Image (cartoon, rainbow over all chains, first blue to last red; front, top):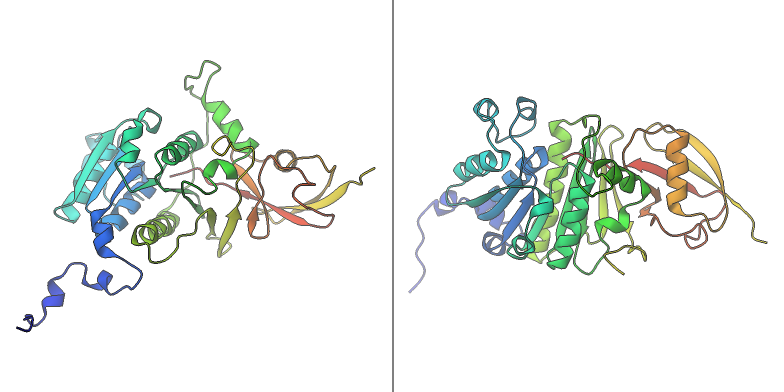
Amino acid sequence: MDQQIRVGFEKDDRLDRSRRIEWLDTKKISESSALVLGAGAIGNEVVKNLILSGMTRLAIVDFDIVQRSNLARCVFFTEIDALQKSMKAEALARAASSLVPGTMIEPVIGRVEDLPIDLYKKHDIVLGCLDNFNARLHANSHSRFARVPYIDSGMQGAIGKVFVSLPNGPCLECASNITHSKIAALRYSCTGTSVSFYMPLVPAEITTTSIVSAMAVREGLRLLSSKAPPLEGQMIYYDGLRSILDIMQVDIDPNCPNHS
Amino acid sequence: MELSTVLKIKNAETGSTVDMELEPDNTINEIIESAASFWHKDPGAYVLRKGKKVLSASITVKESNLISGDVLELIPDPEGG
């Protein structure tokens, strides 16, 4: 017997338009889970893009509270969240879950440096949406140890970058140098505990956030779909004021601690 | 005796350039540090690129196959999220 369909059935399928994209495997994406580190501006956009692409299982990690200055670039946070000083991970998980019913988002309140390795191993992909290099390098090395792809994103004003690190390829630390070490040294005392110091607030606005987040999620979807090779070991560099979008190769640094 | 190499370093944020004289065993780290100091860069992270390649910090000028006249660009590595 021939299969029977109802006229207009495709309009009732939430992911109908996504299923028409050849390289996008919506089934694999819906069966995958992501660990999103950081629930700030990039984290908000990344989560939005992931769940609208059909991903239904995520964990979001952040230790911070929502402040009013976050609201200009964090799509899921509200004035009420700022007034109530909601935890970012919880506010984001709550709002994102209501955007796509059935989505299971686990908020994790805590610092990236304190996460158990098992949390990395439970997920198919890690997206770094962090605001400091120490946490990034930590996430980078732990993702490698857990054998989970790590996609790092960062922004500052009109500049943004996305870096894709697969377990056997060049990693974020391979692209680091003495300037990253100096920042790390500023954050920690000689006893290894974190210290307070003055760092200028990072200029940020939503258009850079949106572009960087979209590029990061695109690379994640390519990885999970396995139909279009991701930009392994490459850095996507965006400069909005110079209208530059570049892809730069990062080689394995022979002295990188993750490769020696 | 090996000759020194003179590279042109470009500040991506301003477009200005400076010529930097280097010995073969100078590292990419040293170039980044000197360039950031010369331009009085704020505390922050930067990477050095040659064309479409990010140069590894620990390798030397000789290992990088850099030659006089090469142009390297110092670009900010954005930290915000």
